[in-house]
Amino acid sequence: MEPREMSEEELELRFERAMLLDEREFLVRETESRAELTARASTARRNEAERDSELLRLYLNGLLRGNLDARRKAEAQMREKVKAKRTHLAELRRIFAELQKAAVELRERCAAYGAGRTF
Image (cartoon, rainbow, N blue to C red; front, top):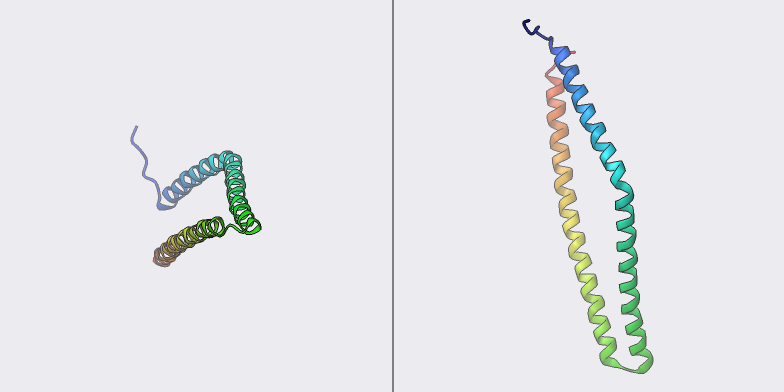
């Protein structure tokens, strides 16, 4: 039995179906992992808040006891946290800009591809 020749439309439909099945599989996996990610994010936020509270407590204790060294140590740790967060934010902004650029390029290529085809 010889394989029959498919039209361009049939090939495109098969390709689209395969892409949709892959996307569905991806979304199912992501949905299943969502609960775990949410729990991990909540734990991370809670741990971060506890560390911030501890720094503020150290600063307050130093202030109440008149301990300048304790206050300076807490301030230095707070400044380090702020510096680390700013560095992290700058990195996230850089990544976001790269993603935006890639998305625009992809959209332009898709538009150019679609413009060259007739349906």
